[in-house]
Length: 351
Image 1 (cartoon, rainbow, N blue to C red):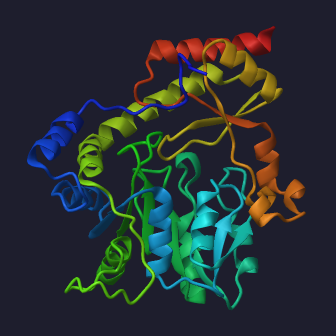
Image 2: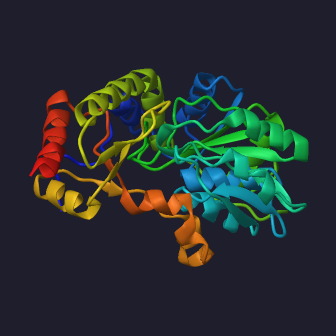
């Protein structure tokens, strides 16, 4: 179904065309092209860290981060219940076990419940900055220090939230705050971790390229074409974040006071404008008829078939999954677009 108001779309108003055209005309379209290191350097500098390692997706970024930290079979990684399943899958890909912690009322991991899930097998805590809300990182970092753990931030939805853990992994999928179509990047201040992630993403070739591979690795490389788009997007990141902040405020003002709608806590950066809605499925069908796309909240990891645990109906994460949705949220959304969307939500609840 085609929507007049899609839930997301990229904003490609900078140097994207110029850079990709140059990549094509110069013949550098593979991962060896010059835009890859330029993007890595620019994105790392934006985040105030020393090293960036570009890769093929947010999921592969998380996988590289965990592998670089030595996570593998027999290990455990603390993962939020309320997240996109890629967070858990990245752990499973390494052979380790995700251990789930319920969410607080802001949808982020409930920091007060992390310590009880730590065991001698725990190696990493993976906080996820859900929908652009930064987790309470100080107590997470204190726990990591106390128990000698590492911290991998899943920042897929939170470009603009500055990293504080050992590694932060970002997605560059087309619906994210900035995009390269498909892609991801890890940032870190640790040169050893950066080298290890770069080594693993490129099939772990030895320096002499002898075709002897001493470890299991991946082809998780980003192409020069993708990096050209990602660099242009990074150049506009402050502008895009500011535009999204205005969108958040306009939704807040327009939706406040509607019986049947519960607004969610503010976001540090706006990825998606999330809310809770009575008669959610009816509302979504009504908005779809008006050309407005919406999406459901994530479901608890313990409800997923691959991680099924009978505790899931009692989870806070499930309570939010039952009535949560998000509205169209992207930098190309105009004030008139938002007024129409808000007007249709109001009309639904006022009938």
